[in-house]
Image (cartoon, rainbow, N blue to C red; front, side, top):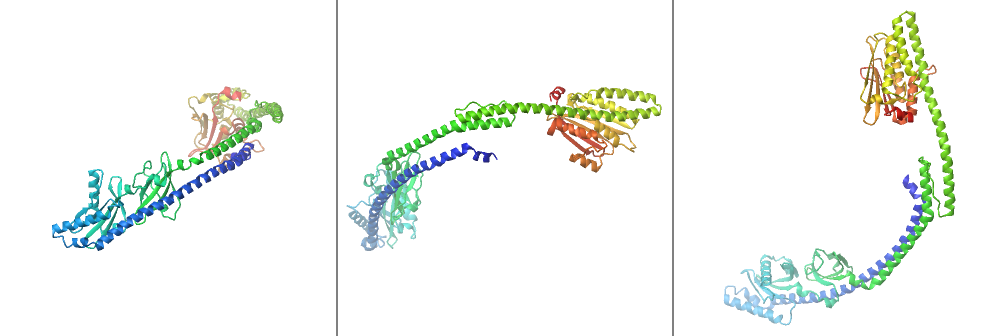
Length: 583
C-alpha cells in the first residue's frame, strides 16, 4: 500500500522526469565515449595483428627451413647412414659424428635461427650436439639435461616428430625442440630458445608494451612483466580472427593480439597498454565527462529548486495532515515562500484549530454520557440483590428464627455499606473480596451447611483496582443454578493473582453442575444476553462494562472445570485506584 502511495506522489513523478531526462543524455555521451574508445582499440589491434602475422611468417619460414634441413640430412647424408654400421668401431664412429657436426656448423655459419643441433643414438644412448652457447654453466647443464631426458623418454608417436614443441629447460625459460627419426635408431634434432625469437619492441612499435609467446593453453611462457598469472584465450589466435583480448592487472590494462605460429604449439602475442593507445582521446573523453557533469549539476539544481518551492511545502502539508489524523491537534504549518502555499497553510491552521475545539467538545460529551451509562449499569445490580435479600429475611421471619435474622441483618449492613460506594469508579481487590465474603455469608445463612468458600489473593494483587461489583454476578449465578439437588456442600473458590504482563487474573470456579452445553456455547461466542424478564442482567453488565472500560485489553472466558463445575476467568490490566479514577 505504501509503495502504491509513493508511486503516485509528486516527488516520485518529478524524480522520474529527472531520471528520464538525465539518463538518456548521460547514456548517449557515455556511448559516444565507448564507441570512440572501442574504434581505436579495434584499429590498433588490427594494425598489430598484421605485424604479428608478418613476424609469425618469418619465424615459420626459419623453422620450416631448419626442419627441411634435418630431413635432408637424415636421408641424404652418408655419415648418418654409416653411423648405425660403425657402432662397434669407436674411432670411425667418432669421426662420423665429427663430420656430421661439421656439416651442421657449415650450414648454420651464417644462419643463427636455431641455437644448436644434436644427434642421439637410441641403441647406445649417446647424445652429441653442436656447441651450446650459454651465459652460465648452470644454463649449459640445464639445456643438455633437458635434451637428454627428452630423447630418452620420447616415443615414435610423440608430437616432437610432427611439430616444434615448447619445452621448459630451466625455471621460467622455454625453447622449441624438433625431432626427426632417421629410421636407424638415430634422432636428429634442433633446439631454439624462445628468448631468441622475441620480437624487438621497436619493430612493431609497441612503445610501453611488449611481445611474448604463449602455450596452446594460453599460458605465457616468456617474460611477462606485470601480467602475473593471467591466461590468454587461444581461440583468438587464428590469422582470420581479428578479435582482441583485454587483460587487466592491478595497475594497468592491456589490449592483446595473438597469432598462432604454424608448425609449433606456441602463440605469438603482443601486449599494448590501453593508456598509451587511448592517450589521443584524453581531451575528447574529458570534454564528454565535463559536459555530463555540467548536465547533471544543472538538473540537480533544477530538482533542488523544485523541491524548495513545491515539494517541501507539499511534504509539510502532508506531514501536518498525518499528524492531525493521528491526534496531534497542536500541529501548525509555517508560512511558505510561495503565495499559493502560504494561503493553503493559513487555511490549514485555521481548520485545525476549529476541528480541535469541536473534537474536545465531542469528547467531553461522550465521556459524560459514558460515565453516566456505567453508573447506571452499576446501580442496576443493587435492586437486583436487594429483592433477593428481603425475600430471605421474610422467609426467616416466617419461621421466627431471630438469631439467624440478626446474623443476616449484620451481613446485610456490611453488604449495603459497601454498595453505597458504587458511586466510585473503582475499588481495590481487597475491598471487593471483603464485600464478597459478606455476600457469601448471607447465602450461607440462607442455605445452612450447604455452601463453603475459599478466597486466595497473591501478594500485590490486593492493591489492584477493579470496577465495583465485578465478581458478585458470577457468585450469584453459581449459587442460583450450580448446586440444586447436590448431596455434598457447594464450594466456591476465587483465585486472584498478578501476571507477568502487568495484568490481574481473577478465576472463579465451583464444584456444582457447571454450564449447560447450550449456555456455554452462547457465553463463549459472546451471544449470551439478558432476556426480557431481566434474567442474566449481571453477566451482561459485566461484559458491557469490561468492553467499555478496558476494550481489547480485557478477557472474559467461560468453561467447565475438569471434574468440577463452572469456571469463569477474567483478565484485566493492572491499575491502581488513582489510575482508574483518571480514566
